[in-house]
Amino acid sequence: MDIEERVSLIKQVGQEVLTEDELRELLASKKNPLAYDGFEPSGQIHIAQGLLRTININRMLEAGCDFTFLIADWHAWINNKYGGDMEKIKTAGEYFIEVWKACGLKDGVEFVWSSEMMGDPTYWEKVIQIGRHSTLTRVLRTTQIMGRSEKDELSAAQIFYPCMQAADIFHMDIDICQLGMDQRKVNILARELGPKLFGRKPVAVHHHMLLGLQQQPHAASGESGKTDAVERAIAMKMSKSNPASAIFMTDDPDVVTSKIAKAYCPERKAEDNPVLEYCRHIIFARMKTLRIDRPEKFGGPLELGSYDELAAKYVDGHLHPMDLKKGVAGAINDLLDPIRMHFAKGKPAKLLEQIRSFDITR
Image 1 (tube, rainbow, N blue to C red):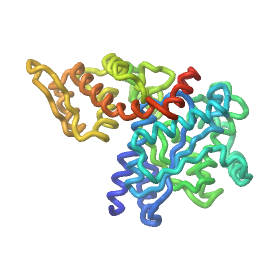
Image 2: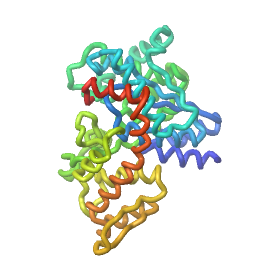
Image 3: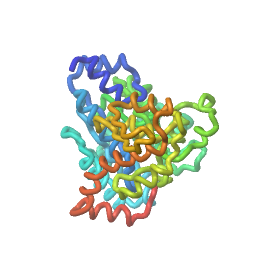
Image 4: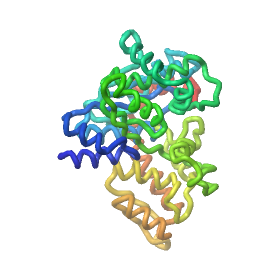
């Protein structure tokens, strides 16, 4: 692929790219730039973390990037996941890796644990450098990255977290930060401080936050224009803390069908419609067509070859929400079948049993 083709593919990953010109310059100067994503290990993985994350990473690999996946065990410990039980956090990390492999993650991804960097004094030098050049107020504004608010009562350890995440980028020599929109504040911090402290600035590719299945207050109020777009996306995203809003990677088929049947799906409306979001970001990214079986009296079976075709028929009223939900539930279950089989026996089954026994949803 030429540079423009690679840029186009990476833009399929990023809802926001900071900046496209910098991305072009990077691709022109470096054949295989290093991209990364990171995750605090805790709880069961839902499809935004599993399927969607795998789709995005595979696109980055196809665009010629090398990729590092940071299993942020120390970050999870600092953020009090599993009550700070590091053994449980590490078990969750192993489970995360198994999920991504079962999702079809392509070869070429390196898994790095944050604990592997903690014994290196040069890492902590970077953390302190970032802290020295940031005000406490600025750091507190970035706590959104760990699911917190600057209004929350934070431990002293949690204040280190944003400085550590910014330091991760430079310590691992990352060229492209490929994380969700909820992580953009710390990437902006890294981009601002990078040239002065480390002589370079990473490109940021922020991917879309998949909507939760239930109707959100922001969607119901119609006040989207009055709310910051990033804050709104985070407020409406799929969340482990509300299991009814998320499809988990090993949910039984009937559970998946039930959750989607109850999902918010406003008739003739594509905006803020989580069922259509599943189609756009997951189904058509992994499947060539979406088949919707419906009785002849309601138009008969439909086979749709693109999201645009689907959305047009839905908005025009040629497809009822109930029929759409049935088709989406079937497609999602088809995509999840290999993951359910992977976790049915052996080491994966044991890991899943352990994660479920921890009884945590965030």
